[in-house]
Length: 327
Image 1 (spheres, rainbow, N blue to C red):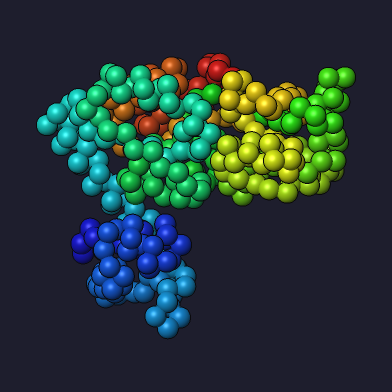
Image 2: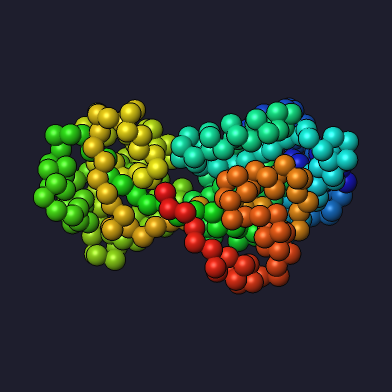
């Protein structure tokens, strides 16, 4: 059994069973991927994937049991590499993050700049994807941490540490009727529901707080466009397609001076940003420093205690006395 075979089966799942995309991700050929998978199946004695002709169409029950084990093995090999790098040169290495566009665009730049000044020989790599993809990246050791804002049920296998709360806001063009209404009183869900809306992909964040708020009032929002990228949402608001609902932190007064910001914190429950990682994993000192720069209350001791906790309830107790910052 070879590590490359394990990489192939994990990458197949991550790339939606597409052999060509898997081959590109692994920098190899399609026949090479197929050969590695066949060899592993022969060795373990069961098929890991269902096939229709030459095409892989599904994961078998055996595959569903075996592939998560392969992910853990690959993650363990990454821990071994990290320990070796730490002993060879404590102040150089890589920090690999999976995160959302909003975090990468509006929150992380200042933190990464400060971190880079302290650790000039640590290379930082940012990855984006769906919650399922980002969780798999952490499980397999492809990334060190995930910074997640919603859809936390996708990260049940990870240790998720609370970092901050964030609220939503509405953006409209200056001449929009909603802007005039908001100046006369508080914005309402009923008023929002009467206009075409542009917001984050509901499926990308799971059942979002936005979705829950409308459903609780018996309202069906007219969502005409969804995107994972906040800048895309603002672009289509500018074009007149609809009303944008975005993270409050994603409004920049200088760059977005042509849009009007309406407070919506009273309409939607706050969401919480978490940083997640595999349980019992080995962290290098600069990784602890990055976590604390991102969330000052997450000291090395508190992170270690969370990684050693036996349950999510036990981890929650570690943060019961923490007042998270609001964005």
